Amino acid sequence: FLAFIPLKVFFFLCQFYWPDYEIINTLGEGTFGKVVQCFDHRGGRVALKIIKNLEKYRGAAKLEISVLENIRERDPDNKHHCVQMLDWFNYYGHVCISFELLSLSTFDFLKANNFLPYPVNQIRHMARQICHAVSFLHDNKLTHTDLKPENILFVNSDYSLIYNAEKVWNNFIEAEINAVRLVDFGSATFDHEHHSAVISTRHYRAPEVILELGWSHPCDVWSIGCILFEYYEGFTLYQTRENKEHLAMMERIQGPIPHRMIQRSRQKYFHCGRLDWNECSKAGCYVKAKCKPLGKYLLSQGTEHHQFFNLLERLLEYEKHPLFSPACL
Image (cartoon, rainbow, N blue to C red):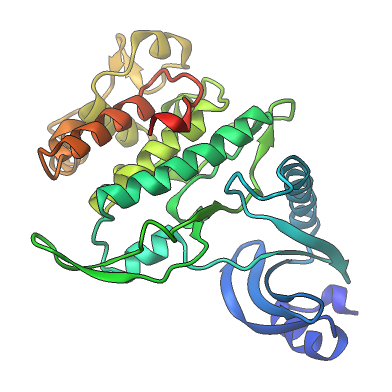
């Protein structure tokens, strides 16, 4: 009968019918179900992802398990900064996946810190790990497709308090202990699999996806650029919900979209080879107020800051190449 009950009742009954796992609290919630912290009586604390008992979610969960098994097989020593699946099972129609227990997401830490930016040396340390993880996925013919700060978790989020002359006080995770992990492989796609037309959360979506040109590994590279910008500034680079406005923001920040991409697209956003956009409209004024050329977002003229923006320019190229070596960071 557990196959037909709501998740709230399911969690209550688990305390009586599920002796291996003791639910401690809820870590997160989504359309798919919930993630809870559990005490596994066979091996300590774990994070358990419990999927709703609906066929479409069960099917997606099985695809995610396939990806996670592939990652575990190719990285048995957990060296490539991807979350490790410990076990999975089907409990009365609810697919359950257990993971190593991690700490706050990089977004939640930013939010708890009043959206004060991360220091540049902190960003470098995280960027190296993120690029290493994504490069590992690409080498194994996988595209994550949903990279965002919420899907990058700290292994340990203990912090020190440092003084920032411009922003007053700032919580700061010490670089030596701020290991991160990529999580949520529910949308990850192997190269040989069907590629959905629309991928990624809006703010981190690559131009080739918006223009319906087809996508591959480079769409993850674009997402990394958007993520690192957010770490640096404390706010999202593309604050929009509509495709044409999104493209207008890209052109304001990074210059005109290449003619080759326009020609290959269905051109519904363009007229005579240019973006069909009225800068004097209400939306046009919003974009002009919200966005400026990328280099004008520099917070300092220091060498590290200029080097960081050189990296952002490479990550946010319209026509990108596969991810370069993390060793260059």
